[in-house]
Length: 294
Length: 182
Image 1 (tube, rainbow over the protein chains, first blue to last red):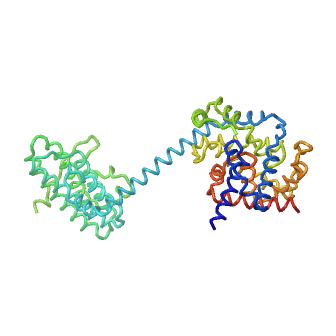
Image 2 (cartoon, rainbow over the protein chains, first blue to last red):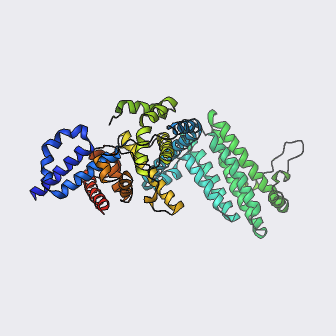
């Protein structure tokens, strides 16, 4: 076994000496005798020697003196940079987008266990809170997802009531109403009116009474808050009050002319449905708040 | 065999990446003759070997620009690309002509007349016998005995262990001896 390994090693060294004579010429003299004893190995070394001699013969000169390849290389180098730059740019962008996607996925994975808590915190949040925009967004999604007009109407009134409750809560703390909350009230009133116009004709009268009473109640709260409001909150509360007041007056008018209300809103032209006091020159006189009195 | 200094290669490669034509030309001038010799020994046709030499360097340029980093020495990487180009050529040649690879034209014998080597086997016989070997064995013989590379270098180029290259070399020499003795 040891002898076989020694012979193998000698053969490798002698082949190395044949292949790379410059670096291993000294080895030939020291190991050459080992293979001479084995005719099979000797034959291999002779083959290697012949092979080396033959393969090291000078090769014929290239017909074009390698100039064509040189010109081809330089021409290619002149032609490709723009494509290369675009490819590199795309690669960088793909790499960036890949990292962004990984980061987003990691963030979602991290937030997944927290999401019920976040949703809960958002639902409880007040204007100015970190999660308050999420609360408004969730409400909008819920409202848009409702298909039945009755459901939309109920949701719109509930969210409007939530805004009024928030205004009431903020008034107690002395904090100022933000623009988002104020403008949200105007949008909610419009959504309630549009949903109201879509309700079935058979139940329209009862629905109109219910909505006008709800809006009247909100208006009453806002009027009280507005009367007590400090200077910074007065403008926002006044704007909210006017939005709810207009909705309330429109429902009162609609009770007088339900068909006119329905046709104007269903046609997408709510401005055609005028309040009792409206006239082309503007200005109006509000009807008495009979429901509140009741 | 004279080899380029690694530092010079790195500098040339860095300049080549920046589309420096002089660096590309310098790399070509440094290695084109060796690659041509290698391809000639693989293929046995000077015109084809010259054409493929140009292809090798275009592939090198593409690789440099695509920032594909080689794990071998630059010389080893170059020979690997040359090997792949030669294999592709053999495949396309065979599929186009249907001729066996050993029928490729062999250039005239350049061995000096009267030498012992020329007396034993002709240059043509030897080339034909080499081309009858499996591709990897051909590669090992040409890199070892044609290009004078050490076993370790050949192992790097072929992506094999030193032991595997020695075994391939042993088998190739046996097979070659057997063919030439027939």
